[in-house]
Image 1 (cartoon, rainbow, N blue to C red):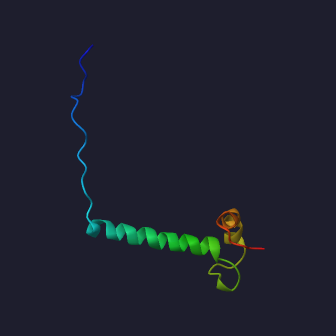
Image 2: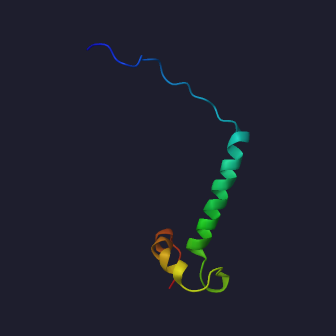
Image 3: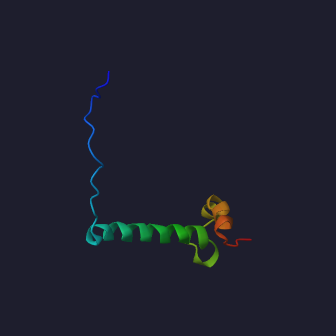
Length: 71
């Protein structure tokens, strides 16, 4: 049983990723982060997009974790 089923090769090749291929993902992640930051940090009061306290209650602990005052 000294033989393995799969042949052992060298280290896997590292494929560089171009900035052009990475840019759409970076924009997507940036927009997603801004939307998340809005809902955690500013979704209450006069700037609220959704009426009621539902969103505020869901992200309440996250607000305190990130240092946003809310009461």
